[in-house]
Length: 425
Length: 173
Image (tube, rainbow over all chains, first blue to last red):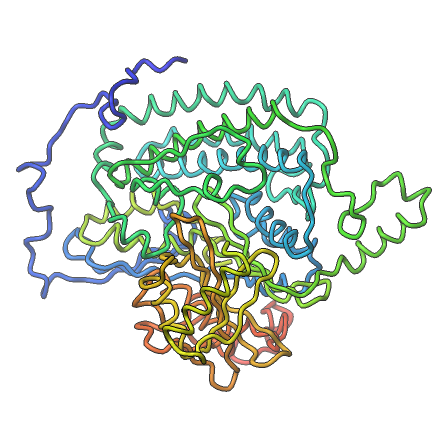
């Protein structure tokens, strides 16, 4: 489906909307401000089980009429001590644990942990494994953004988008199932590479998915960009000055929507991202509408990266041949005593990592995902910490919501895209 | 990343500006630069690196704690600084003992440190002097102990099932 809209028009004027001005013009006071604050301030609890909070987020709101005067996030409802549990696992067994933190971007959690350990043991990742990682990462970014799109549109009253977005996410999960056998939390990335090469038919399936998904994004934009309710609720809502965002350490689509082109894939390339040609979408005003447009544009860029990675997929190993770190091929176990020893040592004890501490960082769908690993020389990490972008970005919520209507708070949470599994860990 | 020489230059500049006892050591490991400073001068060092240094690191990307048990002093607080224009990272860390784990807060420099300092306080018991709202963030408010410390037992908390509810006193509260 071709885009019927002209492309030489700036993106913010491209949608064909009617304008319903707020009564009294854009500068008119919002409803509720005329009330007496001393008599009308009241505190309510929102969550943790509220359908619009994208997980078990609890907010303590002080309202003056319908205007939010203060927002205090209270978190920890799904804190399961994953970081503590990681300290009791061998390095390669930590990967399934960290995947369950940010449960929509599991490939990213696994990658950043593997990158930190690979730095500690000074292990090079073969080029084919790096490309396979990029293919899965970018598909995961699209899946994560699709889930965000569906639930956010649902919060704003557009129910049908949820089913469309989840339908396409299912196709991505089918692709994940082909490569690793799992739809969620695949444990596909390993220290030193990926666990298995892609099966026959994988490439055709991804290649068929790319034009399909491009057409779908066109359709979603055709539905949403002319939806007057959605536009009214997103435009000029939730702006936060760029200086405040940087002061808070906010990264990812929120920062890019405010016009700052910071993306670790470009700035500090990892996993061969410097081999690919892609653009960093940025916004101009930093409102919720820009956050929506930036993520939609990111999905298109991710498709381009996947296509380039498939075109240039190098031949060679999919995991390092260092037998101290990666399991030997299964067929060698029957003939090689050495392979059997390596297999036994890796499965029982795991590999030992020399003492040291590293901080690795990648660009997840929500911003900078960092992983700090402290190794004490044994086969288990002494500390695994995830710097989760949702945890840091959540601090921007009060700047987005205070002084605005409570309905705008719902839109701001949706466009913030917090994942509580990542926040609470 | 500043290389090993660059790290020494940064350490020399910090020493010159804030005194010799500020910098405890430098560590260049696996292509990552880490500046270790005395606990009392964390705030001044980071303020200097943010605002006054010739090549400033203007952003705080991560603040996290760790436990170096059995080495002393046990607790560590790490600050990951970022310079966006130069795409450069610098780690700053400080180590404090468990007897008096006190570190000055940097919330006045970076408001983003708020949640992260609360998490380090919650998990390791490091007290950030001057933090405006130092409460537990992930664990329940009435929780005792700091679970990420290495001497805190794994699975040390009884899980309530029907078969063992009589063994856990006052479980219904």
